[in-house]
Length: 321
Image (tube, rainbow, N blue to C red; front, top):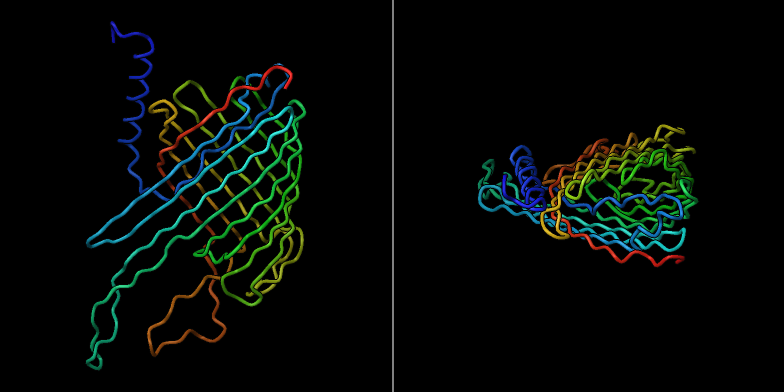
């Protein structure tokens, strides 16, 4: 590396780091999620260094034809505006995946099958959230509303509102460890089942960490827990308090590859101890499901993704603003 200016050496070092990761991680790209928003805590003298607004967008596409046929589309975006000791942020994402699979169907000859194919949606999820934070140095009060849906998981619509207290447990440079505790109310409308709606009041706990060791690499990790406070009436029977536990875990790494362009790796884990009723597929002629048969969706879902992410940053607020 002798003879290269310092900036070029850093760029080449970052590229080698990126190529090494891509060589080690050969993963199928799942629907993309927007970049994790950074927590914004600090004293008055630090606030002037924080951009007045930030935004990011990401997109994903995947397709296969021939013996395996599938199509995956996804998009996500976040935007946040910081003013005085307040921050207003919005994020949203949507993803859809369709696959064509071979199936056996009856032919015109009695007792003889023939090969056909069926196209079905294997992923259909969307989510939006609008959040407000009021900061008091290393403390904050927050509230947000959210709406979304996940058809394969049996949830046609989810709407909710949360409020609570947040605090930066650790802050050094651009590294932050944050804790949140609050109350959550969620309304779920199932795709199928009787009853097909459930309202859940829950306790909420959240722990999140973000780090930015240099100008090229950043990382984040978070875990959120929701536990129901009240008894729920479900299609498969009642659910007692704290028997409906929902855990949402995320890990992410981001590498700057050009200007505001970034390559990101994300892992997302979602666990629900009381999952929604699973939508039943259409049966061939002559078959029927057992009476009162109602399977449940899987308790655990995971998403692993590699995304291209573009970040935008606004100017820092003027002193006193």
